[in-house]
Length: 109
Image (cartoon, rainbow, N blue to C red):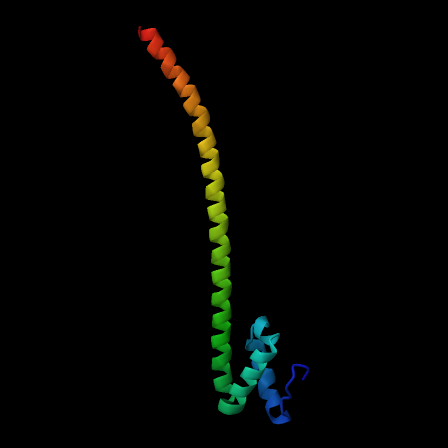
């Protein structure tokens, strides 16, 4: 293989059966592939699938955390924009209200 390690012919078929269970990140990671091969070699196909499932779960959790972080950042940016707009509106409204308040006080005297 071009990944820096060679899979013996007697384990190549088992390794090929494992490939569809791997997320793209694992298939493209030479160290990850070698780790899966070592699990296959030491514990058989069942142990390799357990390792793949653990890697896939970790990969999904990392992706979910990154997506959550992006959504939180977008929400915070949106809230900051809204609060800046509200501050601008309050400043404009406050000036007008102050003038109205002064006019009504002058009318009372």
